[in-house]
Amino acid sequence: MEVIVQPTPAEAARIAAMLIARAIERKPALVLGLATGGTPLHLYDELVRMHREEGLDLSRVRTFNLDEYLGLPPDHPASYRRFMKEHFFDRTNIDPRRTFVPDGLTQDIPRHCREYEELIESVGGIDIQILGIGSDGHIGFNEPTSSLASRTRDKMLTAQTRRDNARFFASPDDVPNSCLTMGIGTILDSRQCLLLAFGSHKADAVAAAVEGPVTSMIPASALQFHADAKVLVDEPAATKLKLRAYYDYAYRHSPVLQ
Ligand code: GLP
View 1 (cartoon, protein in one colour):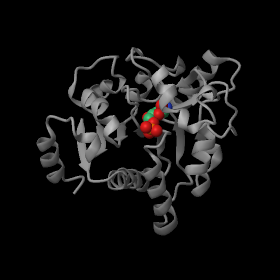
View 2: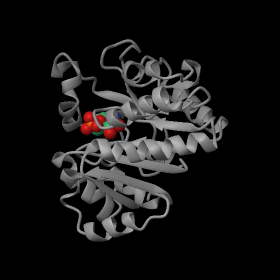
View 3: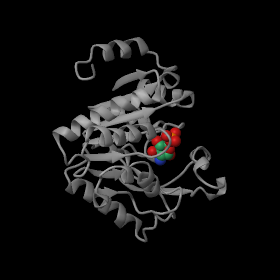
């Protein structure tokens, strides 16, 4: 894994946006895997800015979101479809027909999950997967003990995740207890992963994912098996990393990033 520490979330997000913009220039029909939550907001803002001010063309890009709450209609204020529409899709020239978010209202979960996987495969797989990390080390909604080979499926949320995400709902009791999520195997199939993590409350999860053993107790540690995973963090999220000096040296001497 390549760890890039930046002074602020905005600076880390700028690097991620630059990598995505370059990839779109090379391949206009890029397939992007998208994440929700507070973490990717700077990244979406920067991509929107690049679209408006620098002509970044997203019209042929396809997007697949990692996850969705079960039981929430797409227009629910806390649904991930609505989140993506407000923070990203409606602010760019992305074609809504090329955006995919798991359907939280599906009546046939196994079939819907199978079709989601087949759709990703039919467009050639995900080129760049954006990821956040839960304070318990989850990616997507793959909670601790998720199979490292898992595919898109339904998953029960932990009490901690429901507490962490309660701020997006009118009341903590409104947080659904289950979701649909790409699996860890699905995420590992993407060609590149960009994991973003900001704030001191992510420091333990980041250190465990990057420098700890690979374990389903820290689902993000599975990224150690990914051939091209970059971890972009701000200073507070980097405080528990042991090899910090090495990461900084590698970043300063990276021909791709400098
Ligand atoms: C949710 C999402 C994850 C996200 C995590 C972190 O659980 N399903 O994809 O990474 O929250 O959220 P935040 O970025 O708000 O800290």
